Every structure is written in C-alpha cells, then in structure tokens.
Amino acid sequence: MTRIALVTGGTTGLGAAIAARLAKDGYTVVVTYYPGDARVIAGLAAWKKAMADAGYTVKAYPVDVSDFDSCITLAADVQAGVGPVDILVNNAGITADASFRKMTKTEWDAVMHTNLDSVFHVTKQFVEGMASRGFGRIISISSVNGQKGEFGQANYAAAKAGIIGFTKSVAAELAKKGVTVNAVAPGYVGTDMVAKIEPSILAGIVAKVPVGRLARPDEIAAVVAFLASDDAAFITGACIDANGGLYFR
Image 1 (cartoon, rainbow, N blue to C red):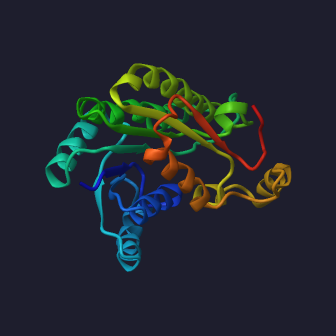
Image 2 (cartoon, rainbow, N blue to C red):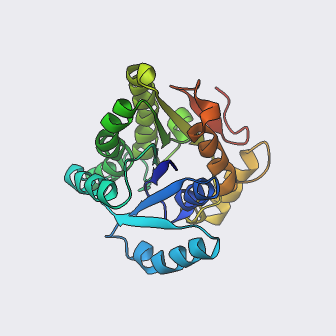
C-alpha cells in the first residue's frame, strides 16, 4: 500500500515544496493549513491547481496546530478520509521577531505555541498508530537559528532548539518500535517568510553564507524525502544541518 505522509503548513513556502517532493516520490500526501490566515486561504485554490497540474493529488485539511483539540479533530478527519499516517512532517511555523527587551508576551507565546507546542500536539495524534504498526517517520523542521541563536529571535530560536531536544528524546523512546524521529535544521531558505526580511539585512545574511546564496525550498525538501525513505531506516535522533556552511557544529 502507498504510504501516507502528512505535512503541516504544507500549502506555502517550504511546506509546499516538501509536499510536492513527497507526492513526486509516490506518497499519498495530506497537508494542513491554518484557516485563520487570510493569505493562506486566498492562495489555497492556486496551490491546489498547481499540484493538480503537476499530476499530484493532495488533500488539504484546516487545523490550528497550536490548539490540541484542533489536532485531535484533524487526526480523526485524516484517518476517516485518507487513512493512517505513516510519515509526519512537522513544518508549520511563524516568526514574530523583536529584540528580547522589546518582545511582548504575545509575540513569545505565538511563536512558542505554533512552532514548538504544535510538534507535541500533532505528533501525539499519530505516534501510537505508527508504533503499533511497526513503522513510522517523524520529521520536524528546526532551524540553524535554533542551534546558534539570532538577534531578535529569542522566541523563534528557543522553539527551534526545543524541537531538537524533543526529537532526540522521542527517538530514544521509539527506536525499538520501527519509528524514526529526526529533525532538519535549514539555514535561510528562499521562501515568502525570508522575503519579508528587510533587503539590506537579508543581503548581509547571504553574505555570511559560504555557498553565497539562500537555499532553494526543493533542496530542503530532498533532505526530508531522504529521511522519510526506507534508506534512512538506521538514522534516528539526528538533526540534519542544511545551511550552506553558515554554521558548523
């Protein structure tokens, strides 16, 4: 049977590239989108058409990944409409940048709830099914800034660092169940989120990247696709860096 892959935040940016790559690789792909984001809703039809034009059939479900009950509903809907999830990609995320001295509690909470709490909320819904079937892939998108920190991103860096700790801990628990748990830590990727960075600041960031450019979304999607494959069965608890040499651990 074709394996089912779920990508949170899979209709835009890096998530859309991951969804397209997994669909290309033959998975049945399900994505989620946030129904409270007018920009995402406005682009949903165009995204569906682009996927159809590429020959991919992908189903999209609304969910607020920061809300546990919403994720319970998502899991029930996916199970009923598509089937049991074999591969989970925790990709959904936001930014709310500000220097820590100016950062508000609202900005802190929004990023922590969406970027870190969501990994618990969504993974919790599918992990038992994976373990009982003896196969699963849980792949979460961290960030180079979760490894090295970044000015104005105390909330984002903390959430992305938390994903790495989550990944290593859950990997240890599930290793004997046939479920691998890994993270990917991209550097700066050419997505709409990065495009919002002020041009002079972005130019300075690119200048620090040894390869001299931003990552293409499909390059990060290729790393995710490898971790989802049978070829990656012996890799668990890892965080794969894909940052163009911006940071070496």
